[in-house]
Length: 136
Image (cartoon, rainbow, N blue to C red):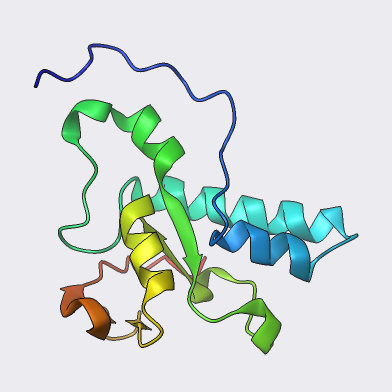
């Protein structure tokens, strides 16, 4: 199959039910400034990496940087509802597919300090790329 020569720029970001944005909006309901702050953190991390932080979690190379950047998602490692920080040290950049799998595996371990992602349900253990300026 030949990939399309040009993909249209997404008009808006679609949100899936398991998205962390749903959690952020619920957590900060009525406080658009905090939601915007979170969105800036997310955008900064996506710009910093430009791809998933997890080894082997790649989008098709023919997509191009602009489309790939619009598809990447940022996962909150620990839930805001559990009083976890809304900071980059609690976030990781993933492709939508891996992000959905992370939400489907209750045993998921994201260890930025040691650079390891584990999804026991799917028998996945992968290396995480963590840049020195990840935390800002």
